Image (cartoon, rainbow, N blue to C red; front, side):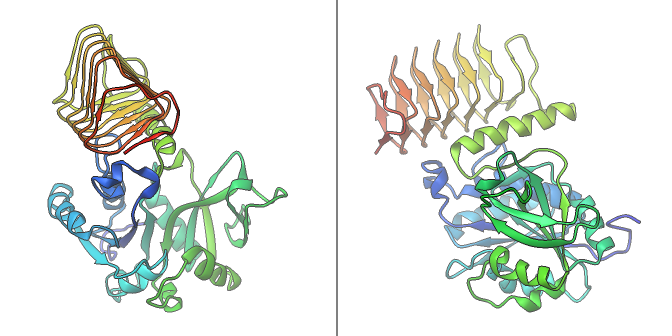
Length: 372
């Protein structure tokens, strides 16, 4: 039996888009976090593509920040991805459960089909078909995707039976070892769970899931492969490296090839690359970028229309849309450069955070300094 057989009602999905994206500023001063590019595609599009692959025919985006920008995104990408995308606008932040109540009529259309819920910050290989199959087989009210972590004391640990998947309880930031699997932020739910949720700010993790677990209807299935919450710059870069490594394992044709490429790199076909460059590992170069001669790029992201002039070096950093880097400049150590920043020749930025539309004429040696 497969998760989605011909004639079965198609599942719906809800993506928790969230609010201001403060952890990813200054990039989110330009666009909402879900449509910041990740590996040359808006973050949320990776999830929507995976949901479509899993059989979904409609995705609801729960939004409470800059809805007009998200609506423009919907118009463009609904056609590109060939799937219905609906916007559910919150008048106030509704937490992680409240949005399900607001989208009740879409998620529960009377067919009884389970639906997916995803946090928009999460990147992984999205084993959604397998998750749906497990959910149906176990007759769960809800199924949580869990992932293994090295240090569980930083997270809320999911304690469950490894054979059946039945969840016993949750332990928040345990001081003693109780397990090393945590909530990966991806759920499969049966419509009956909606009866537990009121249209008010509610946490699905702290209020709803413990009640489902008490009724012995909450299950866990383990993620096989990488996982990362990419909601802040360092994790965004780590997540990119994991994502590109996954592309490598799958022998994706998206990865760049050439004598100047080192490791896993993705470059938009519209980019211009100069002579004598060394690019990689773990680099993403967006649409319309121009890279001068002798440039060195590693563990970094260049969003659309970035220009890096001759012999400059960018490492462990993110450069925002339309930013220009002068000759012999050096940007490194988790620097995050906002949109339309001009960096003068020979300037060094060591871990600087630069807000949009700035001219940077002097070096910044103090890591974490914010240039307003």
